[in-house]
Length: 342
Ligand code: ATP
Ligand code: MG
Image (cartoon, rainbow, N blue to C red; front, side, top):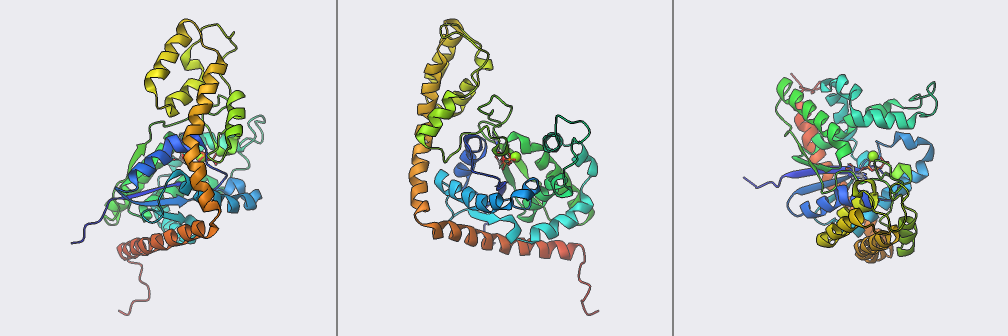
């Protein structure tokens, strides 16, 4: 029997350029795992109904995301870059899986709840949540179909996605039990930094909140954003402070390879104080060292747009082959063959 590598499915919404939170929370892991697993990296363009009024942004972001992946070091000759809507089996499988999806898991899903509140006007109790579409409400079901379509074993994601992977496991268990054992129960894997805070000090750096440092930012932009970054409660330059209250340290923990120096800085900060300028200058240097090789790789792909298109087209084709295989198994299990001659 041919040896089959275990599979990974994970993805990103095409809503804008990727940021350093994606890198620390997801991409870094993907890059490590891409040789070991058969990887499918999905650009989830069914799951952006909250951007329905700005389709040009979504269409443009599909290419931006692929370019960011290439710049970050994903290798499309081994891993498959997949555009969700170009594999219509995703929608087909989701429809069948909806039969086995407990609605309470959507009602109680903490990530979905928080996102729906953010879409509705949080300042106005009367309109709160009103503009949420059915498509948005069921996006965790779409994710379950994404993962199960590839019969994936592992799903490397940020912390906010864990309830969706739990839903996927439940759907797989129910289908396997009630219909036929087709789907592996996928495991979630969070990265070294499961949730990076925003530069505004907000709980999560997020494309749609505008509190990001992007992988595409120039050295000057990084310096400007870091200078303006929230750095804890106001404090004189020579005053000591509390490390946990200053998100600059969360970023140093995430990106500074010199762990011993960061520990030393933390001790000085709490004992005698360190100026925010010193901390921010260090962070700017550390972030630019991380982003510089990505800038170089990006320039190569920017000059060859056909490489980006080819990566998307070939990856999507490879994905479609597996998608068809899974759907054949599902149709067979559901005895969906109405035109068979009896
Ligand atoms: P949007 O605001 O459009 O939802 P996003 O920034 O949340 O964008 P997603 O496309 O929803 O990005 O998420 C892609 C992947 O990156 C997911 O696995 C998610 O958990 C992870 N991720 C996103 N933001 C962060 C963050 N700040 N820290 C760690 N992981 C993150
Ligand atoms: Mg998100």
